[in-house]
Length: 252
Image (cartoon, rainbow, N blue to C red; front, side):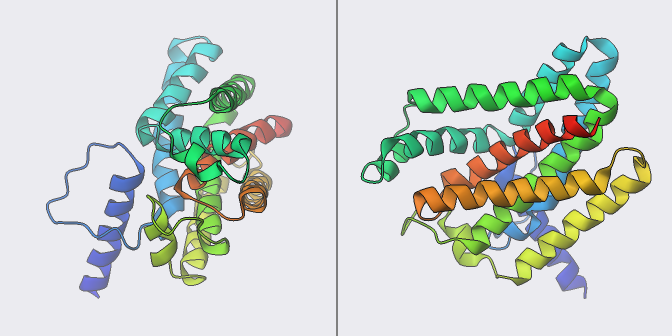
């Protein structure tokens, strides 16, 4: 039992090391073969830290500045990993079937990458300003959790487009559907705790909306590309997180 407990904690730590820029220094070597199953919990960590920064900034600055600080914090916590994937996926979307993978592998950002990054950043920024720190706090957490649950669904449900790549191991080593159910359990637990702490925030409808948006984004990308890559996995998180925050403004 102790071995299983250590393995679970080791996998979670590995997920945090891979998916975030948190200053973690594990004493033992980590295996990264079971990290995708912990994506919703990674979202919880990122979401709670970002929401905490947003709440504190709301006491010190005007809403638009607090929202900007929260946006910067969210990207800093992930090292821009998912934003980079979104921008590469945008270039691939615009390049056409023959040049799609080559465009995504190019380190230079094209016009579509810049436009999409600006639109996503603006959507998140304006949504946070509209929500305010009170409602924005649980919305940030739910958006972070449901969008990463959406990435887990994309990993399990759709083929991987490359024989190699930075996200290939995620597809190959995810145990489907077991890891999908495990990730869903994490999401339900987060939403259940959210109801206790924010009874007036309409947690369950927003969580359901976030899940639907995440599934839809993953499906649209897979339909257009024929599958997913590591870049499109990141795009699922960035796009779904922004759309979930926008939807949250409708609940206020």
